[in-house]
Image 1 (cartoon, rainbow, N blue to C red):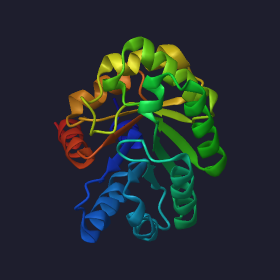
Image 2: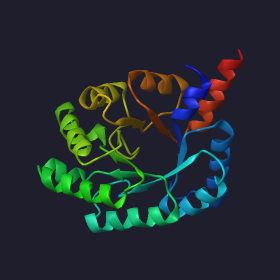
Image 3: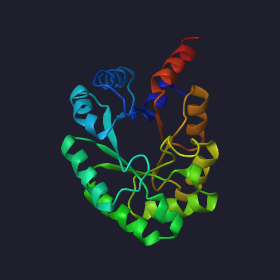
Image 4: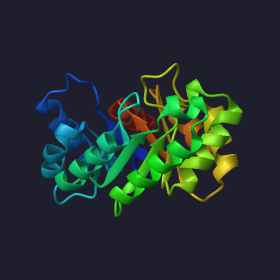
Amino acid sequence: MQLSDLCRALESTLLTPVALAGEVEALCREAAEAGFHGVCVPPTRVRLAVEVLRDTAVRVASVVGFPLGHQSTRAKVAEVAELVEAGAAEVDVVMNLGWFLDGRLRAVARELQEIRRASDGLVLKVILETGALSPAQVREAAAIALGAGADFLKTCTGYGPRGVTIRDVRLLRQVVGRRCGIKASGGVRTLDQAEGLLSAGADRLGTSSAGAIWAEACKRASN
């Protein structure tokens, strides 16, 4: 894999609640230097990231309903509106997993449709939390998100039962084909993991280890 291809797939993530402004700024500068696709930062850090990354090609993403997904639909839609106003280019929303497991599939679909309307003009990624679902449930959740207009299906929050696996990515790719993108996230820490997930069918990688993965890839390329 070419280094440039890897970098274009990386979304460097900093969603810890104790992230400082200086850490967000450093994350953004590193992303610009490396040529990462984007950064994913907390909603209250979006304006800062947008300002630091002005005049670069790096896109700013943030999260909605994170990390549990059980906020009300009205609250999630309001979060989207705030991200639009702050200048985010991409939105990663957590699906209401409780509703889904209750069998309230229409409610899940309606919520995602409302969020799709509120995020018009932005890239919308729906986080399924694949580690909490059976393969059959992953297929069903993916179909709902795709039907609601998701641009990407995202595997995990990083706060769920487990992180992403190659099996998750392959399963999602089987379900959606090329109708939408796949963002693999949750526990992506090494270059080998990153390459394996991309080879399995992921288009993007969300990781708080983007800098370390990039450094590892640069070192390998120079040998």
